[in-house]
Image 1: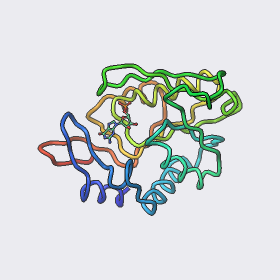
Image 2: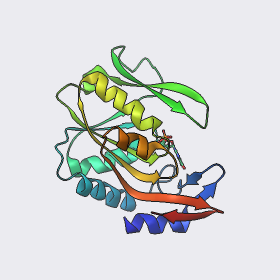
Image 3: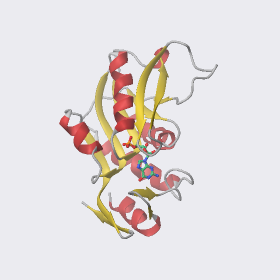
Image 4: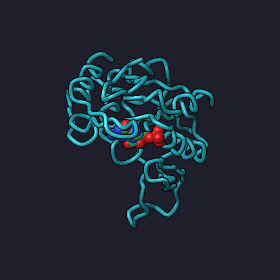
Length: 189
Ligand code: 5GP
């Protein structure tokens, strides 16, 4: 998606250990016009697929999923990272290993909002090591639902997530694929 790549080149900042900061438009401040185009691009990428629900994880996936959902005309469910009184005790759970924090945390979705009837599209901002997507897949599997695919705004192809998911026969669609980030420079595939 050219508009997205232009934006990444214009305002993206490469930080230590292969981290790309795009918080001026994607995951802190939100550029809604661009998010609308991202939503349309996801719809185009999955136009052949039958999807009943979009699943993401809080916090940074929510805005992306919510705007994309307008084009799919399906509900969004976001997995929660904390167990709170507001969340039903009956939940489907997934585990996510965070490389940056070197720890595993749980994500949960109420059993009310996913069922074996669902065909689920997982959306997220980044695909890096694939742990967030795999944690969301565990939730889909626990519900007995079908994982139709994973859509990410930015895939960092120099990390293993993309190949891990594709090896597992999961359909992955990325709107921008970064091959390398060297000396602060971003190289797209
Ligand atoms: P994974 O589980 O694929 O390793 O990482 C996915 C999650 O980590 C994404 O949901 C995203 O929030 C965060 N993440 C991974 N790499 C980056 C990055 O380069 N920049 C930002 N801003 N977030 C990232």
